[in-house]
Image 1 (cartoon, rainbow, N blue to C red):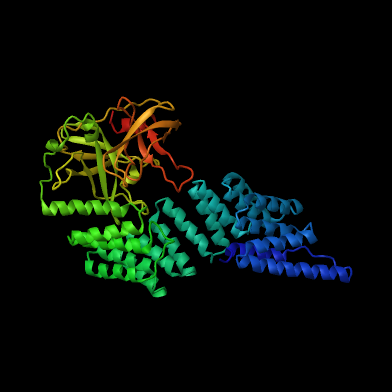
Image 2: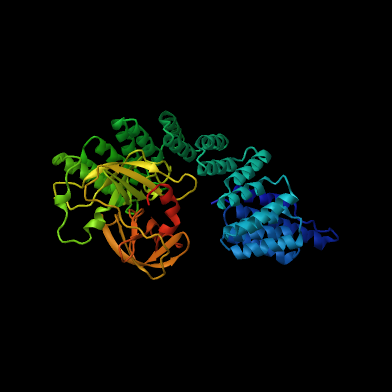
Amino acid sequence: MKVNPIFAVLLSASMLAMPQIAVADSVEVVQESAIERLFERGIAAQNAGNYAEAEAIWRQVIRRDRDNFVAYNNLGIALSDQGKVEEAIEASQEAIRLNPNYAFAYNNLGNALRNQGKLEEAIEAYQQALRLNPNYATAYYNLGIALRNQGKLEEAIEAYQQALRLNPNDATAYYNVWVTLSDQGKLEEAIEAYQQAIRLNPNYAAYNNLGNMLRNQGKLEEAIEAYQEAIRLNPNYATAYHNLGNVLYDQGKLEEALAKCNQALKLPEQTNITPASAHTLARNCLGLIYQKQEQYEEAIAEFQKAINLDSNWQIPRNNLRETQRLLALKLNPQPTYINDIAWLPNNDPDVPLLRSVVRVIAATPDGSQTGTGWVIKREGNRIWVLTARHVIHHEDTRRISDKIAVDFYSEPPSDKVHRRQEAKLVKIPIENDLDLVLLEVTDPPEDIQALPVLSQQVNRSDRIRIIGHPATGLPWTMVSGEISNRDRQLLQIAQTTVAAGNSGGPVLNEQDQVVGIVIKVSNSSDRETAGFAFAYSLTYVEVWLKKWEMF
């Protein structure tokens, strides 16, 4: 792997700035020539991605010339590329000690500090580099990254724009402007920035990403053109083929979509993408096409193949369950508002709780997305359901679903399905990023009531229960745990097993009162949250619940 172009530029510039050794006699001439050759070798090793070799070379230079601040600066870059962040910081600081006016070293110090998550210190380092060199485009660019990591999006864009003013051909800066504008929801401006990045650096993956953005905005014909350009640049790019199939599916051109997804499966697999590999996505796309054609058995087979390819991606599991439901309805039609009370188990004390917890189903471009919600209020023939915002928006696009439904708990016969009704989004806290929404459902089953809530602080070690629909388990699963920690906003829950699908579910105390709402489940790949579930405390969200007149 080649070194980041930014580092390559810094290394080249560093060599130009290398301290000159006085030519006093033949010995010193030989010494100067040797150091120059070492610099050439160090730069070549760094550009080739041989960071350990580059480190060894810069250390040779330093042994010959302990005051060579450029060598210390380049050593810091080589160490940072190897993940040796503490040593990289020390090397950059030594370069600064030897030459306090060396802007390159401040920039590289900022990079190392940013890699440690020390964003304030990194920003100070970048700003010092810019005070020393106001025309230092790379420092503006890196400052923008640090500011974006802090959530200071407007300031980040200003920094990127300064970098572009100094270097209008920096495609990477345009890319970061796109990311930041996307974070702000400024989709039109984001696409303009991305298109400028593509003009500067056209490549098949960039056109594929542009197609995704255009599809998310409903600009299907333009999305098709972008995917086709990606395929023209790389005819073996399976990802673009299945994305093209997705757009054709959106347009109702099912046979054409089928052909594109099958073409994706004939091409080499690509696994370094999200949310899943190209072949997994293509199988899911085929399943959706067959589902639309009411070829449910074929759809079930494709979703099962997608699950076998990637068991961690939950969408095919949701789509499989939905297709099985549609097949059951096709074989045994039932009224939409069927009376399901007869399907409730006898002598189960938890039935009232389970009836007040619904399964939320949201339509997304990839199929069905599911989560949990619970009834917070009932008036006459209407109920209001609280759930997490991310349950009803697409993971990648963050677009709110325009088709939401809820399933009610019962134990239907094998030839029947749960009662399902449409839900309407009525409240969303747009003033901040609170992961919470309110749904309204008309004509629910007559026995369903709101869950009681307790809006007061809970204690560590309090025992709790969570009801939800884990994607890896059965719906309406009830698990126990305890509050392991808490602050004003969050409850941290341990000794429980929850998974995707539990989000939005109620956290109940031992008196079966709701004390929180699940917003994040444990994830073994995330070191910060592994082994825990996190929930908003009711004391934190009650300001919104009161504003929405829920209690």
